[in-house]
Amino acid sequence: MSINFKKQIKCPSCANFAEMTLWQSITVSDSQDLKDDLLKGKVNIFRCASCGATALVPVPLLYHDEEKHLMISFSPCEEADKIRLFNQVKETSRQSGELSELSDYNLRFVCSYNEFLEKILIFDNGLSDKTIEVLKLLVLMQDSEKMEDRVCMFGKLDADQIEFMVQDKKEGQIYTSRVPMETYNTVSKSLRDSGVKDRSFDWEIVDADYAASLLRGSNNNL
Ligand SMILES: [Zn+2]
Image 1 (cartoon, helix red, strand yellow):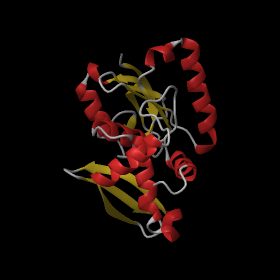
Image 2: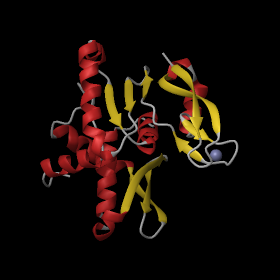
Image 3: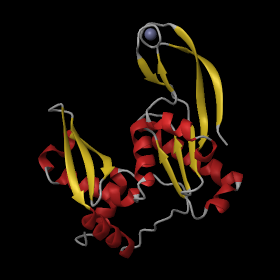
C-alpha cells in the first residue's frame, strides 16, 4: 500500500515554507505514475518555488514491487548510522512476522537516494544486484590507483552490454564503461557456484563492501 503525509518544509537555502507530500511507502502496483516520479527524482525531494533550491527530505521509504518480489528499505542517513538503522529494520521485520511471508523476496537496505534508484533500475532490467556490485568493483579495479576517487553506478542494459557510469570526483569527469553480458553471466555463475543465493532470506546490504567480501572469499575464481 502506498502511504503519504503532508508536511510544511522549510527551504534550507532561503527559509521559505512550502507544504509538501512525503511518501513513506510505495507499492508499484498502486501507481505507475508514482514510480515514474520516483525514478525522475521527484519523490521526497523538496524543490523550492521561491529560490529553486532542491533537497532530499530525510523520510524513510519502503518500496515494494510485488511482481518482482522486491522490497527496498530506503533509510536516508549518514554512513555512521547505517548499521544501527539496518539492524532496526531487520528487527522490526522479524518481530512483525512478515519475514516468513517474504521468503522468496529480495530484501534490500539502502541509505542513499542514488543507490535506491540504482537498485530499482537493476531489478527492472532483470539483473542481479549482487553480480552488478561485483562488476562495478571489477570496473573500478581496472584503474586501481584512481579507485579511491571514483564511484561506479549502473547505467543501462543494451542488447548484449551493460553500461556503467564512472564518476571521478577528483577530475570532475564522468566516464562510461561497458561490460559484455557474457562477463555478467560468467560472474553470475561463479557467484552461484560459490554459494551466493539469488534470493535473500533476510534484509541485506548489497554494496561495494559486500562485493569486496565476495571477491575476497572467492579467491581467484572470478
Ligand atoms: Zn528557497
